[in-house]
Structures are given as C-alpha cells and as structure tokens.
Length: 171
Image (tube, rainbow, N blue to C red):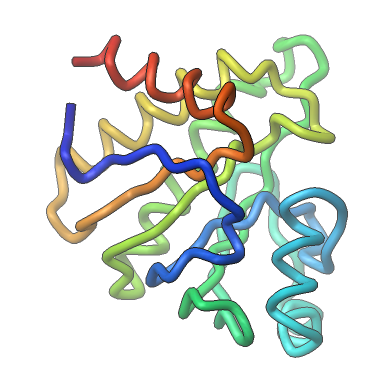
C-alpha cells in the first residue's frame, strides 16, 4: 500500500490540506451534502467566484481558492448520477479522481483530501465507488511524485472501512 494514501473519518471542511475536493454539481453553485457544507464554510466569496467560471462537466474538475476553509484550494469535480451503470458512470467517476489529481498537480497542490464522490445524492454504490477511487488514485500517483498525501475523507467508520478494505486488497 502506498504510504501517501490514508483514510480518515472526519468533516472534510476541517482538514488543513493544500486542497480538498468538492463533490460538486455542474453549476458549481453549491448544493446538498459535501457540496453544501464546503460552500457554507468557505463563505459567500466561493459562490461568487464559482459564478464566474462557467460550471463544470461531469467527470471534469476545476480549482478555486478555499476562502474561509482551512484548505488553500477547493477542487470541484462533478461525479456521475448512478442510473444502473449503463451510462458510463464508472468511467466518469474514475475521471473525477484522475482530473482532480491532475488539476492538483498542475497547481502545486501536494496534499489533498477526497470525499466519496457520487455516493450520496447521486446514488453510486459505495463499495464500487470505493474500488474505483482507490484504483484510480493509486494508479495516478504511482506514476508521479508531486503528490505527498492523498486522504480519503469518510463521513463514517463504515465508509472508511470500505476504502481501507479496497486499499488492502490492492496491497
């Protein structure tokens, strides 16, 4: 297991990292779950900034300042809505992690934390999402040394255990 990958059970808005990843919607204007929490803690300047960058496509990622968050940046990525798996959901979810890491590296981010993208309101099956997240992050950072720490920030011990099991299975 890559020592640069960790699992934490925490509120992502409290983490002091170079960047936290936001499970955003295509407008980037805030929503429910992690997205709403990040926007609330970051403050109104985040919403104002996001209103000027033109949204984000599913599977892509964009970076903004963190404003009132302890993280310097927020990397917004739009995960797929699960509709049964026949609309490229797995490919799009992997793209969220890949694009977020590339945006991070392009902007000098060395430490970042990911939530469980698409597993809340977007209904992606949590076990499969954890598998895709772990494999994608592991594959990307194995080829690059710019990232010093990736944390999978889980909202519960049960969610954390899903990710830990996937990490152990990869070895």
